Image (cartoon, rainbow, N blue to C red):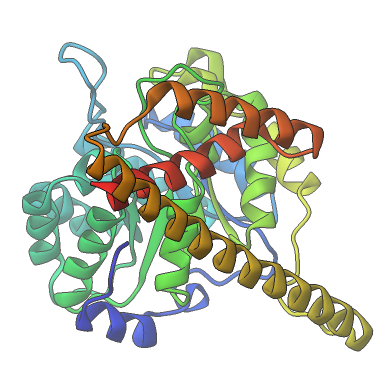
Length: 365
Protein backbone atom coordinates (compact mmCIF):
# COMPACT_ATOMS: atom_id res chain seq x y z
CA UNK A 1 0.00 0.00 0.00
CA UNK A 2 1.35 3.43 -0.96
CA UNK A 3 2.24 5.89 1.81
CA UNK A 4 2.30 9.66 1.69
CA UNK A 5 5.55 11.54 2.13
CA UNK A 6 5.60 14.78 4.10
CA UNK A 7 5.63 16.63 0.76
CA UNK A 8 2.46 14.89 -0.42
CA UNK A 9 0.80 15.55 2.92
CA UNK A 10 1.44 19.27 2.35
CA UNK A 11 0.14 18.93 -1.21
CA UNK A 12 -3.09 17.53 0.19
CA UNK A 13 -3.62 20.81 2.02
CA UNK A 14 -2.31 23.34 -0.52
CA UNK A 15 -3.06 22.05 -4.03
CA UNK A 16 -5.14 24.52 -6.06
CA UNK A 17 -8.78 23.84 -6.86
CA UNK A 18 -9.78 23.36 -10.49
CA UNK A 19 -11.83 26.55 -10.38
CA UNK A 20 -8.62 28.54 -9.92
CA UNK A 21 -7.30 27.50 -13.34
CA UNK A 22 -10.31 26.14 -15.25
CA UNK A 23 -13.52 27.85 -14.12
CA UNK A 24 -16.67 25.82 -14.80
CA UNK A 25 -20.35 25.96 -14.00
CA UNK A 26 -21.33 22.40 -14.85
CA UNK A 27 -20.26 18.85 -14.03
CA UNK A 28 -18.65 17.16 -15.79
CA UNK A 29 -16.18 19.73 -17.01
CA UNK A 30 -14.44 18.49 -20.13
CA UNK A 31 -11.09 18.94 -21.83
CA UNK A 32 -11.65 17.89 -25.44
CA UNK A 33 -9.94 17.89 -28.81
CA UNK A 34 -8.14 15.67 -31.33
CA UNK A 35 -5.62 13.01 -30.42
CA UNK A 36 -3.19 14.78 -32.75
CA UNK A 37 -2.94 18.21 -34.31
CA UNK A 38 -2.94 17.55 -38.06
CA UNK A 39 -3.70 20.88 -39.74
CA UNK A 40 -4.91 24.36 -38.85
CA UNK A 41 -8.22 23.67 -40.58
CA UNK A 42 -8.77 20.43 -38.66
CA UNK A 43 -7.97 22.17 -35.37
CA UNK A 44 -10.20 25.20 -35.93
CA UNK A 45 -13.14 23.21 -37.30
CA UNK A 46 -13.02 20.79 -34.37
CA UNK A 47 -12.62 23.60 -31.85
CA UNK A 48 -15.57 25.56 -33.25
CA UNK A 49 -17.79 22.52 -32.80
CA UNK A 50 -16.55 21.86 -29.28
CA UNK A 51 -16.96 25.49 -28.21
CA UNK A 52 -20.72 25.06 -28.67
CA UNK A 53 -20.82 22.51 -25.83
CA UNK A 54 -21.31 24.15 -22.44
CA UNK A 55 -19.33 21.41 -20.71
CA UNK A 56 -16.14 21.82 -22.77
CA UNK A 57 -13.80 24.16 -20.91
CA UNK A 58 -10.46 23.55 -22.67
CA UNK A 59 -9.17 22.36 -26.03
CA UNK A 60 -6.55 19.60 -26.17
CA UNK A 61 -4.38 18.33 -29.02
CA UNK A 62 -1.26 16.19 -29.23
CA UNK A 63 1.64 18.11 -30.75
CA UNK A 64 4.28 15.45 -30.15
CA UNK A 65 3.13 11.82 -30.24
CA UNK A 66 5.13 9.14 -28.39
CA UNK A 67 4.63 6.24 -30.80
CA UNK A 68 5.62 2.66 -30.08
CA UNK A 69 7.40 2.21 -33.42
CA UNK A 70 9.37 4.69 -35.54
CA UNK A 71 8.28 5.71 -39.04
CA UNK A 72 4.72 6.39 -37.90
CA UNK A 73 3.04 9.75 -37.39
CA UNK A 74 4.80 11.33 -34.43
CA UNK A 75 3.06 14.69 -34.44
CA UNK A 76 3.54 17.95 -36.33
CA UNK A 77 5.75 19.54 -33.69
CA UNK A 78 6.17 23.30 -33.27
CA UNK A 79 3.80 24.41 -36.08
CA UNK A 80 0.94 22.82 -34.12
CA UNK A 81 1.59 25.19 -31.22
CA UNK A 82 0.77 28.13 -33.48
CA UNK A 83 -2.46 26.35 -34.42
CA UNK A 84 -3.30 26.02 -30.72
CA UNK A 85 -2.73 29.74 -30.36
CA UNK A 86 -5.17 30.35 -33.23
CA UNK A 87 -7.76 28.10 -31.56
CA UNK A 88 -7.53 30.08 -28.34
CA UNK A 89 -7.72 33.39 -30.20
CA UNK A 90 -10.87 32.41 -32.12
CA UNK A 91 -12.81 30.34 -29.55
CA UNK A 92 -11.51 31.66 -26.22
CA UNK A 93 -10.91 28.08 -25.04
CA UNK A 94 -7.74 27.51 -22.99
CA UNK A 95 -5.38 25.08 -24.72
CA UNK A 96 -3.66 21.91 -23.52
CA UNK A 97 -1.01 19.55 -24.86
CA UNK A 98 1.35 16.78 -23.77
CA UNK A 99 5.01 17.38 -22.94
CA UNK A 100 7.71 14.76 -22.54
CA UNK A 101 10.94 16.75 -22.10
CA UNK A 102 12.44 20.18 -21.39
CA UNK A 103 12.32 21.30 -25.03
CA UNK A 104 8.58 20.59 -25.22
CA UNK A 105 8.00 22.64 -22.07
CA UNK A 106 10.04 25.59 -23.30
CA UNK A 107 8.21 25.68 -26.64
CA UNK A 108 4.80 25.45 -24.95
CA UNK A 109 5.69 28.36 -22.68
CA UNK A 110 6.85 30.33 -25.71
CA UNK A 111 3.49 29.81 -27.43
CA UNK A 112 1.43 30.43 -24.27
CA UNK A 113 -0.14 26.97 -24.01
CA UNK A 114 -2.41 27.14 -20.96
CA UNK A 115 -2.35 23.57 -19.60
CA UNK A 116 0.27 20.83 -19.95
CA UNK A 117 -0.01 17.14 -19.30
CA UNK A 118 2.52 14.39 -18.73
CA UNK A 119 1.64 11.22 -20.62
CA UNK A 120 1.52 7.66 -19.31
CA UNK A 121 4.79 6.71 -21.01
CA UNK A 122 6.59 9.64 -19.42
CA UNK A 123 5.16 9.19 -15.92
CA UNK A 124 7.06 5.90 -15.66
CA UNK A 125 10.39 7.72 -15.96
CA UNK A 126 11.44 9.71 -12.86
CA UNK A 127 14.30 11.24 -14.86
CA UNK A 128 11.92 12.59 -17.52
CA UNK A 129 9.44 13.88 -14.94
CA UNK A 130 12.21 15.61 -13.00
CA UNK A 131 13.45 17.28 -16.20
CA UNK A 132 9.95 18.57 -16.91
CA UNK A 133 9.55 19.74 -13.32
CA UNK A 134 12.81 21.69 -13.43
CA UNK A 135 11.79 23.30 -16.73
CA UNK A 136 8.52 24.44 -15.13
CA UNK A 137 10.10 25.78 -11.95
CA UNK A 138 9.02 29.37 -11.32
CA UNK A 139 5.93 29.11 -13.56
CA UNK A 140 2.25 28.86 -12.64
CA UNK A 141 1.15 26.50 -15.42
CA UNK A 142 -1.43 23.83 -14.56
CA UNK A 143 0.00 20.33 -15.07
CA UNK A 144 -2.01 17.12 -15.41
CA UNK A 145 -0.28 13.83 -14.63
CA UNK A 146 -1.58 10.72 -16.38
CA UNK A 147 -1.20 7.41 -14.58
CA UNK A 148 1.82 5.33 -15.62
CA UNK A 149 1.17 2.66 -18.24
CA UNK A 150 1.81 -0.05 -15.64
CA UNK A 151 -0.44 -0.42 -12.61
CA UNK A 152 1.89 1.33 -10.13
CA UNK A 153 0.47 4.01 -7.87
CA UNK A 154 3.93 4.83 -6.49
CA UNK A 155 5.14 6.18 -9.84
CA UNK A 156 1.96 8.24 -10.15
CA UNK A 157 2.44 9.75 -6.70
CA UNK A 158 6.14 10.28 -7.36
CA UNK A 159 5.52 12.28 -10.52
CA UNK A 160 2.98 14.49 -8.74
CA UNK A 161 5.40 14.98 -5.85
CA UNK A 162 8.26 16.05 -8.16
CA UNK A 163 6.08 18.75 -9.70
CA UNK A 164 4.85 19.96 -6.33
CA UNK A 165 8.39 20.12 -4.97
CA UNK A 166 9.46 22.72 -7.57
CA UNK A 167 6.56 24.96 -6.58
CA UNK A 168 3.70 23.94 -8.86
CA UNK A 169 0.29 24.04 -7.16
CA UNK A 170 -2.14 23.77 -10.09
CA UNK A 171 -1.98 20.02 -10.39
CA UNK A 172 -4.38 17.23 -11.32
CA UNK A 173 -4.20 13.50 -11.96
CA UNK A 174 -5.61 11.81 -15.07
CA UNK A 175 -6.84 8.21 -15.00
CA UNK A 176 -6.37 6.74 -18.50
CA UNK A 177 -6.17 3.04 -17.65
CA UNK A 178 -3.28 0.57 -17.51
CA UNK A 179 -1.64 -1.60 -20.16
CA UNK A 180 -2.19 -5.33 -19.97
CA UNK A 181 -1.29 -8.38 -22.07
CA UNK A 182 -4.74 -9.84 -21.46
CA UNK A 183 -7.15 -9.34 -24.35
CA UNK A 184 -10.26 -7.57 -23.12
CA UNK A 185 -13.07 -5.22 -24.02
CA UNK A 186 -11.01 -2.09 -23.32
CA UNK A 187 -7.80 -0.78 -24.78
CA UNK A 188 -6.43 -0.18 -21.28
CA UNK A 189 -7.60 -1.86 -18.08
CA UNK A 190 -9.49 0.72 -15.95
CA UNK A 191 -8.34 -0.92 -12.70
CA UNK A 192 -10.57 1.48 -10.74
CA UNK A 193 -9.13 0.59 -7.30
CA UNK A 194 -5.91 2.45 -8.18
CA UNK A 195 -7.44 5.88 -8.93
CA UNK A 196 -9.80 5.33 -5.98
CA UNK A 197 -6.76 4.76 -3.74
CA UNK A 198 -5.11 7.89 -5.17
CA UNK A 199 -8.26 9.85 -4.30
CA UNK A 200 -8.26 8.38 -0.81
CA UNK A 201 -4.66 9.43 -0.26
CA UNK A 202 -5.02 12.88 -1.86
CA UNK A 203 -8.73 13.80 -1.66
CA UNK A 204 -8.12 17.45 -2.58
CA UNK A 205 -6.13 16.61 -5.73
CA UNK A 206 -8.41 17.01 -8.78
CA UNK A 207 -8.92 13.71 -10.58
CA UNK A 208 -9.83 13.51 -14.28
CA UNK A 209 -10.89 10.45 -16.28
CA UNK A 210 -9.73 9.86 -19.86
CA UNK A 211 -12.33 7.41 -21.24
CA UNK A 212 -10.89 7.69 -24.76
CA UNK A 213 -7.67 5.92 -23.80
CA UNK A 214 -9.35 3.52 -21.39
CA UNK A 215 -11.77 2.26 -24.02
CA UNK A 216 -10.03 2.76 -27.37
CA UNK A 217 -13.56 2.66 -28.75
CA UNK A 218 -15.90 5.63 -29.19
CA UNK A 219 -18.93 3.40 -28.51
CA UNK A 220 -17.74 2.76 -24.96
CA UNK A 221 -16.87 6.33 -23.98
CA UNK A 222 -20.31 7.09 -22.55
CA UNK A 223 -20.56 4.16 -20.07
CA UNK A 224 -16.99 4.65 -18.84
CA UNK A 225 -17.57 8.38 -18.42
CA UNK A 226 -20.71 7.62 -16.42
CA UNK A 227 -18.75 5.18 -14.28
CA UNK A 228 -16.24 7.94 -13.53
CA UNK A 229 -19.01 10.34 -12.53
CA UNK A 230 -20.61 7.68 -10.33
CA UNK A 231 -17.28 7.37 -8.51
CA UNK A 232 -17.18 11.12 -7.88
CA UNK A 233 -14.75 12.07 -10.66
CA UNK A 234 -15.92 15.40 -12.08
CA UNK A 235 -13.48 16.05 -14.93
CA UNK A 236 -13.21 14.23 -18.27
CA UNK A 237 -10.63 14.33 -21.06
CA UNK A 238 -12.23 13.12 -24.29
CA UNK A 239 -10.74 13.00 -27.77
CA UNK A 240 -12.67 14.64 -30.59
CA UNK A 241 -11.98 15.02 -34.30
CA UNK A 242 -14.11 16.65 -36.99
CA UNK A 243 -13.57 13.55 -39.18
CA UNK A 244 -12.61 10.75 -36.73
CA UNK A 245 -12.24 7.97 -39.28
CA UNK A 246 -9.66 10.03 -41.15
CA UNK A 247 -7.57 10.79 -38.05
CA UNK A 248 -3.84 10.11 -38.30
CA UNK A 249 -3.79 8.54 -34.82
CA UNK A 250 -6.30 6.69 -32.61
CA UNK A 251 -9.17 7.07 -35.06
CA UNK A 252 -11.39 4.47 -33.35
CA UNK A 253 -11.59 6.31 -30.03
CA UNK A 254 -12.41 9.83 -31.24
CA UNK A 255 -15.89 11.39 -31.38
CA UNK A 256 -17.10 14.17 -33.62
CA UNK A 257 -17.74 17.40 -31.70
CA UNK A 258 -21.48 16.90 -32.19
CA UNK A 259 -21.37 13.32 -30.83
CA UNK A 260 -19.19 14.38 -27.92
CA UNK A 261 -21.69 17.07 -26.94
CA UNK A 262 -24.54 14.55 -27.18
CA UNK A 263 -22.68 12.03 -25.00
CA UNK A 264 -21.79 14.57 -22.33
CA UNK A 265 -25.33 15.98 -22.24
CA UNK A 266 -26.65 12.47 -21.47
CA UNK A 267 -24.31 11.88 -18.53
CA UNK A 268 -25.77 12.11 -15.03
CA UNK A 269 -23.63 13.96 -12.53
CA UNK A 270 -24.09 13.10 -8.87
CA UNK A 271 -24.03 15.69 -6.10
CA UNK A 272 -21.34 14.82 -3.55
CA UNK A 273 -23.29 16.50 -0.77
CA UNK A 274 -26.33 14.83 0.87
CA UNK A 275 -28.76 17.54 1.91
CA UNK A 276 -31.88 15.50 2.75
CA UNK A 277 -31.94 14.71 6.51
CA UNK A 278 -34.09 11.59 6.19
CA UNK A 279 -31.83 10.25 3.45
CA UNK A 280 -28.79 10.89 5.63
CA UNK A 281 -30.40 8.95 8.49
CA UNK A 282 -31.27 5.99 6.26
CA UNK A 283 -27.76 5.87 4.82
CA UNK A 284 -26.25 6.10 8.31
CA UNK A 285 -28.28 3.04 9.40
CA UNK A 286 -27.19 1.09 6.34
CA UNK A 287 -23.56 2.07 6.83
CA UNK A 288 -23.77 0.93 10.45
CA UNK A 289 -24.99 -2.47 9.25
CA UNK A 290 -22.15 -2.66 6.73
CA UNK A 291 -19.66 -1.84 9.49
CA UNK A 292 -21.17 -4.57 11.65
CA UNK A 293 -20.78 -7.11 8.83
CA UNK A 294 -17.22 -5.92 8.19
CA UNK A 295 -16.35 -6.48 11.84
CA UNK A 296 -17.79 -10.00 11.62
CA UNK A 297 -15.74 -10.72 8.49
CA UNK A 298 -12.57 -9.64 10.31
CA UNK A 299 -13.39 -11.85 13.30
CA UNK A 300 -14.10 -14.80 10.99
CA UNK A 301 -10.83 -14.27 9.10
CA UNK A 302 -8.92 -14.14 12.39
CA UNK A 303 -10.50 -17.43 13.44
CA UNK A 304 -9.75 -18.95 10.04
CA UNK A 305 -6.07 -18.01 10.33
CA UNK A 306 -5.85 -19.65 13.78
CA UNK A 307 -7.01 -22.94 12.23
CA UNK A 308 -4.63 -22.39 9.31
CA UNK A 309 -1.71 -22.08 11.72
CA UNK A 310 -2.73 -25.26 13.57
CA UNK A 311 -2.94 -27.19 10.30
CA UNK A 312 0.42 -25.73 9.32
CA UNK A 313 1.95 -27.02 12.54
CA UNK A 314 0.60 -30.52 11.83
CA UNK A 315 2.01 -30.41 8.28
CA UNK A 316 5.38 -29.39 9.69
CA UNK A 317 5.38 -32.18 12.29
CA UNK A 318 4.48 -34.84 9.70
CA UNK A 319 6.66 -33.49 6.87
CA UNK A 320 3.66 -32.62 4.64
CA UNK A 321 4.08 -29.92 1.97
CA UNK A 322 2.32 -26.67 2.78
CA UNK A 323 0.72 -26.30 -0.65
CA UNK A 324 -1.94 -28.92 -1.34
CA UNK A 325 -2.93 -27.93 -4.85
CA UNK A 326 -5.71 -30.49 -5.37
CA UNK A 327 -7.36 -29.51 -2.09
CA UNK A 328 -7.08 -25.81 -3.00
CA UNK A 329 -8.61 -26.28 -6.47
CA UNK A 330 -11.56 -28.25 -5.08
CA UNK A 331 -12.08 -25.68 -2.34
CA UNK A 332 -12.04 -22.80 -4.80
CA UNK A 333 -14.55 -24.51 -7.10
CA UNK A 334 -16.84 -25.08 -4.13
CA UNK A 335 -16.57 -21.43 -3.04
CA UNK A 336 -17.37 -20.20 -6.55
CA UNK A 337 -20.39 -22.52 -6.84
CA UNK A 338 -21.76 -21.28 -3.51
CA UNK A 339 -21.11 -17.69 -4.52
CA UNK A 340 -23.12 -18.08 -7.72
CA UNK A 341 -26.06 -19.48 -5.77
CA UNK A 342 -25.84 -16.48 -3.45
CA UNK A 343 -25.91 -14.09 -6.39
CA UNK A 344 -22.26 -13.04 -6.01
CA UNK A 345 -19.84 -12.43 -8.86
CA UNK A 346 -17.64 -15.49 -9.40
CA UNK A 347 -14.54 -13.48 -10.34
CA UNK A 348 -14.91 -11.36 -7.21
CA UNK A 349 -15.11 -14.42 -4.95
CA UNK A 350 -12.20 -16.05 -6.78
CA UNK A 351 -10.05 -12.94 -6.22
CA UNK A 352 -11.03 -12.74 -2.53
CA UNK A 353 -10.19 -16.36 -1.79
CA UNK A 354 -6.97 -16.26 -3.79
CA UNK A 355 -5.81 -13.47 -1.45
CA UNK A 356 -6.95 -15.43 1.61
CA UNK A 357 -5.22 -18.59 0.36
CA UNK A 358 -1.97 -16.74 -0.35
CA UNK A 359 -2.00 -15.39 3.22
CA UNK A 360 -2.74 -18.86 4.58
CA UNK A 361 0.24 -20.34 2.70
CA UNK A 362 2.53 -17.59 4.05
CA UNK A 363 1.35 -18.30 7.61
CA UNK A 364 2.22 -21.98 7.23
CA UNK A 365 5.71 -21.51 5.81
